[in-house]
Image (tube, rainbow, N blue to C red):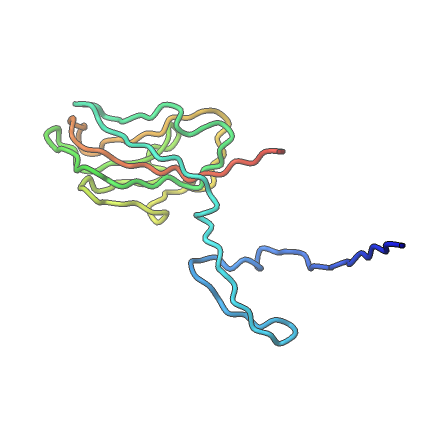
Length: 166
């Protein structure tokens, strides 16, 4: 008995940036042969890794520091926060900034300090997205208008991507 193996060759067009439909949900498209197909949109935020931190102040501090939170080799697309516990104002604190040791308000300037305040990319300042860190770098939350007291907490999401040869 003789076995014959057949090889089928399929050709696909190149995938281009415009072939991605960014968003949440789906979209109906018409294919070249006239058939309809339902395609899911790509939420870019879900492709990024996230590191979650919870930061609390110490009394009379001007800055809350998370040492080395921004890791070498990370391409950080943004940092967002949610105030999970309202910050105290006994030291005249009125707002906070979120950034790194190079730009203290990179991801937000004059952010409210009340519980459930959340930031998004609309709060980013110039240079706030797509930062490649070549060394471990501190993430900092800076007091505005006064200093921190020992009350308050922020949940921090660092949205990043790493690329390796593997």
